[in-house]
Image 1 (cartoon, rainbow over the protein chains, first blue to last red):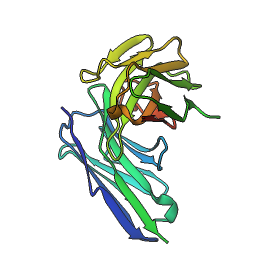
Image 2: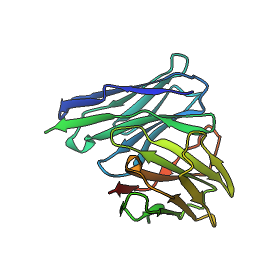
Image 3: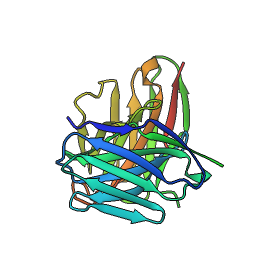
Image 4: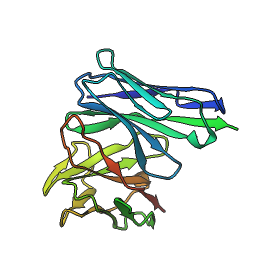
Length: 110
Length: 115
């Protein structure tokens, strides 16, 4: 069974600092890995998708890396802003379904 | 131009009283999913439809049922809600099922409260 872990569960940083969010998974036989953003009481918004053959993806201030062999992914958010405050979830597509981590809740202090 | 719509956004029901949650999509995707997300936990897949083919997760309680009358709509029925069923219910769709580029599009969720 695929297990996805995100550490830390919560993170608070001052505005302007770079964010580093970690995700690990137990079974490396994945199709892809996605990072999602979830605002309080809302649904999930896809941020980045990394295919299993790729090492990283970038979108604006966001960069995600994937090391499939070690079962790890990292999401970097450069120059954080208060609007980046949210919960970030990673999910791996494996065995025809997405398995999610519980998320890292980020607070960016102005 | 909402793509995945869930109604209602908030639902309050009484213990044991059946409730139905609705999801519709304008993306014409062939796969629709239902997830349950409890507070501060990971979303948990309940079941999905590939076209009209229903796929139930092994650990989804029998109390949860689903219907998909057409491509656009999917319903989640909770036959006898218990206090432990209070959660956010998320609907999602995808069109590239099982492919490397498979990505899911989520609705805003329905927050279910059980009194």
